[in-house]
Structures are given as C-alpha cells and as structure tokens.
Length: 228
Length: 277
Image 1 (cartoon, rainbow over the protein chains, first blue to last red):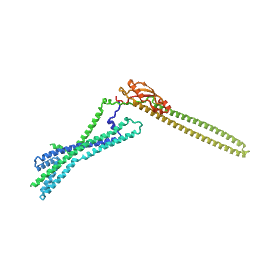
Image 2: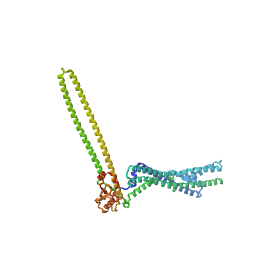
Image 3: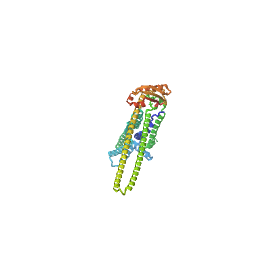
Image 4: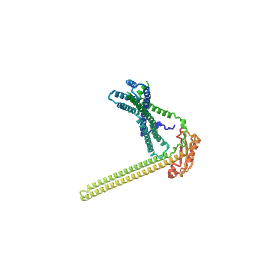
C-alpha cells in the first residue's frame, strides 16, 4: 500500500517553526471564537434590552413609576441593561437637582444631560469591549500564517540545495506542509473579519439608538421642567 | 422573566463562550479527520501516473564497483602487511649480523689482550701503539654501524611515503570511477523511466527483468526479457521504454575500461512502485 500524504501526518511531521506558527494560530482561533460567542450574547441581549425598554418607556407609563420598577429590579440583584441605565442616571440626577430650591431650570437640564452622557459612554464601552482584539486577529493572523509558509518553504529549499536530483516527490511534502500554515491563518482570519464588521455595525446601531433615546428623554424632561 | 436570563449572561458569559468555542474547534477537527479516513481507495485509483519508477538493481554497477573497491582495498592491506613482514625479516637479519660482528670483535679483543699480556713486559711502547690502533678501529666500526642504521631509516621512510602516495592515488581513482558509474546509472535510469509508459494492466508487485547490451557509443544492441512479469503487455512496455530511451550518448564520455566493466551488459528491473492499486 502506498503511503499518501495526509494533513494530519503533515502537521505532526512539520518542522518546529511551522508547528509553533500553527499552535499560535490555533490559540488565536480559540480565543477569537470565545470573543465571538461572548460578544454575540452581549450584543443580542443589548438589542433585546433596547426593544423591551423602548416598549415600556413609550407605553405611557409614568416616569417615576418606571424608575421605581427599575429600583425594585435592582433590589432583586438583576442589573439594569443599556438604555435603562441611561434613563435611570438622567432621571435620578434630574430629581435630585430639582429638589434643591436655588437651582435654575437650565442648570437642572445641564446636570441631567451630563449624567446621561456619562452613562452613555459607559454603556458604549461595555459594548465595544473585545472588538479591537477581533480586528487585530483578523489582520495579523494572515501574516502569521504567511510567515509559517515562508519559513517552511525556505527550509525545504535549504534541504533541496544538497540534493542533485530534485523530483516532485521530494518537494511536494515540504511545500504542502508550508501551505498548511497559510490555510490555518486564513481559517482564523476570515471569521474574525466577518464578525468584526458585523459586530461593529451592530454596536453602531445600538449606540445610535441610545443617542436618539437620550435626546428624546431630555426633550421630555425639558417639557416637564418648563410646564410647572 | 425573559430578561433575567439576558441580565445574567450579558456582561460575562465567558465560560459558556469558551466551552462553545472549544467544542466548535474539536468538531471541525473531528470532521477533517473523518473526511480523511473515509477517503476511499476507489477515488484514488483514478489518479494514475504516466511515468513510473524503474529500478536498477540486479548486477547493479554501483554494487559491483563497490565490491571491486573493497577488494582493491583488501589487496592493498595485504600488500602492506607483506611489506611489513619483509621489513621485520630484514631487521632480524641485520641484528643477527650485528651480533656476529660483536662476537668477532669480542674475540679479537680477547686475542689482543692475550697477546698484550704476553708481550706486555717487552713491548711497552708497541703495546701503547696497538692499544691506540684497536681504539681507532673500534671507533671506526661504531661509525659504520651508525651509518648503516641511518641509511636503513632513510630507506624505511621512503618506502612508507611511496606506499601512502600509492594508496591515495588508488582511492582517488576508485572514488572517481564510482562517481562516473553512479552518474551513468542514474542517467540510464532516468531516461528509461521517462520513456516508460505503463500499461493499464500493471499492478504493484509486478517485476520484469530486462537485459540490455550496449556499445561504447551508447547505442543499444539489443534488449531481452530475462525474467517475465507474467503480463506480456507489461514486458513489452518495459522493452519499448528501453528502446525509446536509447541511445545513451552520454556514455561516450566514459573511459572504455569503466564502460566494459559496468555498462556493456546491464540488467534493469522494472517495478511499478508508485501505483495505488
């Protein structure tokens, strides 16, 4: 029976630099997939949170009632999500400043908006966490794979230099071994690129809905403060 | 409440992600392994190489030449041993002669002393003179002895040098011959291999031995099947390969003695080693 070249054999018998490159890429792949799944859960939960909170907010419920519901939930150790955090920060600051008698209306609005801005940037930070890592993996792993290939081909040519007769059977395994590194690099890079682009679009989507909500909420507060 | 699950999972969920990612990778790996192991032989059979390996084995000139080289080395060693033995014999002879000479000397000295004692009283002056003479003679003998020894040493060194030079020359000739035969063999093998197109009935384990006779110009006189593979088509394809590869013009460059020793009659073994069935 002739012994064919199988990918497993190639990887096991590859030279040390190529094996190191492959190990690095495997590690990067696993870590990036952990990020992919974790981000997926975070972003889908944030999207759902936006929808459900907007539904509750525009259902005509009283704002202080909504705030109390949130406090009740926090007491039950359920942390508030995304948009609700912004609402709570703004409303809390608004109520506190309003109780002080010497405050003028513009100063109260300023304070509430500042509190919402802070909460907004905190939420954005949470959403964008790990996305730069995915971007790095996407661009770098191709180069790492290419590096492995170049090293492998270089080694094979150094080996060929000492041989008088070079046949396809001599070259082929080394080249194949080297090419596995590039394949692995692409295998890591492609999902990372796709997912990075997709997730950054989703994050943009969510943050823009936060911004819209902040504007709408501050206009409501503005109406409330000028009505009395 | 639906949000409860979201809230628990939302800003952590790393362990779950890790499990999912590792599972995902193992699944891909398992899939690859499965695909690899289940790749059937039927698919592989379709891939058929057009050029197949021809091996030169029987009466392999390389092996023959190696044998010749070994024999030559042994002969050289034998010769060296003989020379050494001859030297030892000569040395023994020389020592015996020296002993004899010393014996003579001793006798002469005894005689002289006897005479001295007899003539001591009456020939004081003569005795002195004679003593001086014997002394001179002894010195002369010793000088001769030393001279002979030196000459012997010089001769030894010269023979040693000659022997070493001869050995080196022989080794060089042998190695260049070996290389020539090797390159000639490789050439024939390559040409025959290139022109051999294997019939579809060929299988691994088939073996045909062909005897080819060559002229010093590299032309092929004839080729005959000395051991059939059992498949006439296979034998014929091997024959055709040899006819197609001839003439081997590059063999003209070989010295005639090397050609006669190694290439005049050459056996080729045809074995399709790289088939998949």
